[in-house]
Length: 430
Image: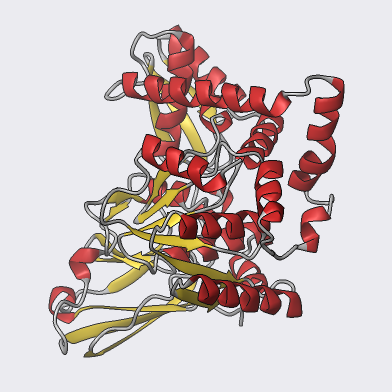
C-alpha cells in the first residue's frame, strides 16, 4: 500500500487542507502519528509538529519527547513541545486521567490560532469507538464515530487516516524502515479500549465475521450520514411538534441538554414524552434531585429544583496595566487568573457563580457567542462536573470561564492600558 497516496486521496476528497492552511501535526511518537508525519513529508505538505509530554510515564515520556524532537529535525519540520503534569491536573480538577489528558491536549492545540490540527486516528480506532459506544448505549450520533473534519471551538481537527487499518500502517512503516515508540500501557487490558482491541475485536473476527472491522466502518458511515440528515430536518422544531417517535425522542433529548440537563437517558426521554402525549393538565418528571421537567397541556418546561452544588471560590482583584493570560489548561482548573478592560468594568462588582441553563459568552479568539452548554460538550466536560465549574460575571454578563477563556467584549484592547486583574482560587476549609 502507498500510505501517502491514500492519505492524499482522503485529503482531496474531504477538502481537509484548503490552500493556505497552516497544518499542525499532533505527534506522540507512536506508530500512527509517526506514519502520519512521514506521509506529510512525502506529500511535501508543510507542517508544524506539536508534541505534548503528559509526564505520565516518567523517563519513558521524556524519551518519547526526545524521539519526536529528533524525528522533526530529521524531516525538517519545526516543532513545538509542551510539558504538562496530567496526573496533577486530574487531581486538582476531580477528573479521570483520560479526561484531564484530553483537556490538556485541547488546550495545547488551542495555542495554534487558525491552524488545522492533523491527528492520526485510524480505522481500528473507529471500530473500537463503535463498540465502546454500543456497550454504553449510544444513539446514532454517538455510533457514527469520529468525523474526518471537526470544528472543536476554535480548533479545527482533521483525521486523514480514518479509513486505513492499523496493520497496513504498521506494514508501511516496517517496509520503509521507519522507527517509532511503543507505549507499554497500550497492552494493559485493565483499560476497556485495550480489551476491545486485543480481545473483543479479534474474537468477533474469528467467531462472527472475518471482515467485522470493515462492516462496522460501513455501518458508522451510514449512521453518520443519516444523523446529519435528521439533525437538519429538526432545525427550528419544538419538542411538542407532531413528528415520528424517533424524531421526537431526538428533539426532546437535544432540548433537555440545551437547557442544562445533567442526564437524559432513554427512560427519561420516554417518560417525558408519555406525559406530553396525555396533553391535559400538568405533570412533573423528576430528572434528578435538582432538575425536573414540568409538562403543562403537552408542553414541557425545564426547572431547576434545588441549589446547585457550590464548592465556594474566592476572588481577588487588583487594578494595573497590561494583561495576564488564563492558563488554558482546562475548564475549572484552579487557581487561574485573567485581566479585563478597567474602563468597561468601572465600579461594578465582579462575582462568581455556577453554570445556569442558557448561559452564553463570546470566547476571545472565536467568532460570535456560544452557549456554555456547547462549550462543555465540545471539550467533553462531564455533566456531573458542570455544576461545579466557576463562572465569573460582571454587570449581568459572563466575562470569564476560568481555565478556558475570557469574553472578547471584556478584553484589554490597548497596551499599556488600565486593566483589572482577577485571580480565582478554591476556598480552603477553615
